[in-house]
Each structure stands twice: as structure tokens, then as C-alpha cells.
Image (cartoon, rainbow, N blue to C red; front, side, top):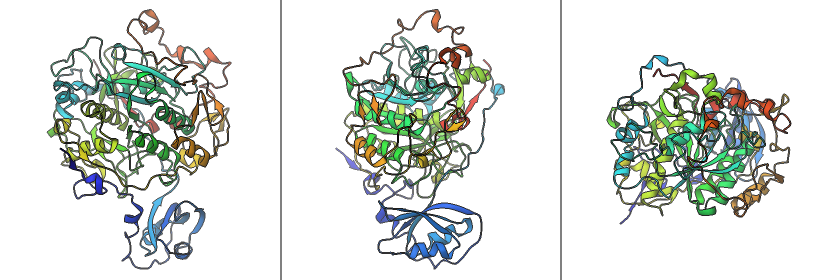
Length: 590
């Protein structure tokens, strides 16, 4: 028996306030508003959506406010304009303006890396950020485990900085390497591996499992992630500095969609613990289009909201209304003890806010020895093999594991149904606005056995024909001091968004190892050319993975200076931490 979720009708209610981006709904937002009058202030860039039949009235309104139109969109009734900051609300109130949204880069709030060595000793039984406490007492993943659902049969695509085979990720069949699309792909000693430290942390949260660890509520001596029975499909896009370009991420998402069932894989969840400050309308944005193609293909896309602070819009592509945008709540000893959202967690706007929250403060997961984070933030080490970090990255990884558990219980559920189940069963927080918490804190105990709803989202879909550069926002990589900008990918190939979006929609953007007209080294991933072999504890054992070999020297560009890419020349400070939505690596004495 099924029931109809709020998602079917746009899922906008007093409790949930899920963003409905139906164009038809947007048309009537400001019909009763008074005429606009001129206002002063610094100019800001906005996207103005017009009502049908408005003619040039909105453009004239912009001029009357002291602004100017800078670009017209052909696909939708909208244009980009620069207007005085104080006139934005007036423009939005014009009877022939459907909506006004920010455009361009959002200013980053520098949060940096925290030194929290005074937190005390680590005991998974009592420490609020341990995976044991989060799984058992907060999101209630152990309710699923005890019912026999561990995520087995569900693969999670991790598009991140790679994964290293440390204990917790060497359980037989735990990790499958997809393509390495990072700047380190040409170096055999770096390929697939997490030289940044972020991807390994995410992998542990989502699906870590110590070898031979028993999956159950009483297991506190061994490490278990939220979905310990799931496999990780490792798609590396970032190097040791966390540097990557939007074109690499688009290629990674396209690969997942196109190869999600190759060689026995069953990719049903995709984790994107990063985001750009590109803020063009999701209706045009290439990243938004890419995640929507994954969603339409049956892959639940989970995205970190961002770590810029409560007053900031969601990062791209969390800003796309179809995906699950995850904010970070405080940690607590039990589900009922969590009452607020972390100050660093982006809340979004009245039009697009967070969907759900889970703990994202001081989360203990697996350490990547010798990685950038490990070398530069040794105070974040927990004993010998764990690492402490905070961010919406960690929160997104928790929800990705939760989605895998739900799908292991009901493998035929659609992404819309999974989103509806997680939101319908979430709990309101006492000290958080709906814009910051969305539906609230997820509770898998309330999802287990619940009827699968008839749910579908009716947002206007992205067409993907927008600008690659606007999708980047302020996040750029550099080659010998020159930023990669404009409508071109990392190989300098011209970007034709109309051609790419057509191929991506047909799951044909990859042809063997070619994407956007170039052969990506280490990426000949047709179903016949790669085996999908997974790691085993036997194949990654020995002294080669000792702490000595995972020194900072292992990651230096000198070991592969002849390559056309190098971590020294392709670097980006803006992608080191903050944009990866996991910007706080904390210390914990042990």
C-alpha cells in the first residue's frame, strides 16, 4: 500500500517549506505589489524572471531604478541586470516581474581550519561525533541494520578527492575505482588515491567497515559507517590541494550516469560534498543539469549545502531543487537532544532552502595518512587511524549512507520517493528556522517499514545551456599563474553547452575515454575496457601503506614533474577546504 507524499504537489507545507520552483507558481508571487520607484546603492547582479506577456515593462523598471540590462536569456523569459542593491526588493515587487534572484559569485566567509585539541579524549560510546553514536542514537541507522538492511547491493558514487585503502575501506569488495579525472591521474603513484584527505573521510562516514566487523548496535570497538554493507565507487576529481574544475566534475557525473550498471555495479546514490559559488539560474546551469540527469536515471543525488554561514544561499549544485540539499546540525547524545543548526551551515533562501539536516560538527571518520589535511592539520588526528572534521560535507555523507539504507530496503524506490521518505519522517529542531533545517533532522527509525509514497517533484527542469564560467563562480584553477576561465574545459577544448547537454541527456557524453572531444588520461572506462576490480585487504597490505610511505613527499609534484598537469601549477586556494564543504578539520587529543 502506498500513500501520496507532499512531494507530489510541490511539497510546500507550513512544516516543510520545500522549495517549489514551478514557473507557474512563481508567476503570482508579487501581483499585488505596488509600482517600483528609484532607489540608490551599490550595483548588484540579478536574474529577473518576467511574467508572460510582460513585454519590456521589467526592462523599463530596471532602467527606472538606475540599473541596466546586461544579458537576455532565450530559453526562458528572463534577463540579467545590474541594479542598485537597495532596489532589489522594489524590482521584485513589480507586478510584471515573477522573481528576482542573485547572480554571480557569493562572497566566501573564511572559516579556516580549527584547532580543537581541548575537546578531550575520544570514546565512541560517549563522544557525540562518533559514527557509533550518530548511527545508533541520532539518525537511527542501527534500526535498519537490526532489520537486516545494511546498504548491501547499493553502490554509492563518491565524486571527491579519491580514497585510500586504510582499515575501514579494505573490507573485500568495499571500494571500486572508477575513472581518475583529477590533475594527478597521470601519476601512477597517485592515481585514485586521496592526497587531499577529504574523500577518505567521506567514504568512511558513508560506508566504512572494518574488516570482519560485526554490524550491530553493540559494536563500539570497530569502525562502521552509516551503510556498512554498501560499496563505494571512487571517482576522483580533486588533487592534493583540493583543486578541480567544474568541467572535471561534469565529466565525473556524466560517467556515473552512463556507467552506473557496468560490470555488476548498481550506483543508486551519488555524494557531492562540494559546491561552487556560481549562482546563475539552475534552469540554465550545467552542474544543475548534470545532477538532474543523474536523478532522472534513478540516482539519488546528495549535495552539501555549503559552509559560508546561515545567511548565505546554497552552493551550486545544492541550489538545484531536485537534489537533496543537506545542512549541518549540532551533534548530540541522542536524536531528541539536537536542537539547532551549526552557524557555518548555509540555509539558502526563501525560494530554495536546505532539505534536511544531520550532525556535521566534530565528526570522527577515517584518516588519509600523509594527505594534505593530515600533514597540515596533525591536531585533527584521533588515535592512529581516525580524523576529526566538521562541515556540511560530513553531513551530506551521512545522508548518502542513509539513502543507501533506504534503497536496500526498497530497491525499486525512485529518488523522489527516497527524498520524500527522508523528509516526511524528519523531526523539527527547537532552535532552527525552517529555512535552515528544511524538513528537519532525519530519523531512519521512522522511515523503516513506512509505506513508500507516491511522490514526484514538479520543478521546472534545467536545460543546461548556460555558461560553464558562471557555473564556476569564483572557483578557478591556475596553470602557471593563468586562471582557467571562459567556456573551455581543462584541456582548453571549447565548451558548447547545447551540444553537451544533448549528449548528456542521451547518456552519450562519454565515448570510451573521450569526453568533450578529448581523451582523458586514465579514463578509458568503457564497459569492455575495465574490470571494476575492487580492493581487498590482501592486495593493499604490507609496508607500502605504512605511515612512513604516506609522507608529504609522496604527494610532491617532483615525483611526476614531466606530466602535463602538476599539482604545483594547477592549484586553487579557493578549492582548498571551503568549497569542499568540509572546511573545518579539528583536533582531538587521544
